[in-house]
Image (cartoon, rainbow, N blue to C red; front, side):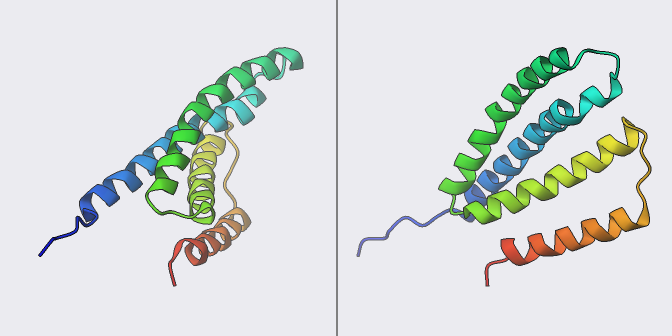
Length: 126
């Protein structure tokens, strides 16, 4: 009797973790590229565009492999996008509060809770 190889559940979790870690790194660079220039209002717009594009290139170097690994491990594009959105929101909140010094208000929290609920329904396999 021939035994077919099965997916190692630890290997699957490891690949999902790799996807999440790569998405976190990617989103740190994305947040810096998109919002970091707000701290430098006196720098000409053309300069911040070029710098932001250079930072965004690094973001893509992590985002593309993250999505490829996740997709190859059976995650749907919907799941990958929603996981990325949660990571983006969490990183953005930290960035806005600690770097941009903007307060996190109750209505922001309520809105984020609704976004997280939407993620749950898209990521959960029913």
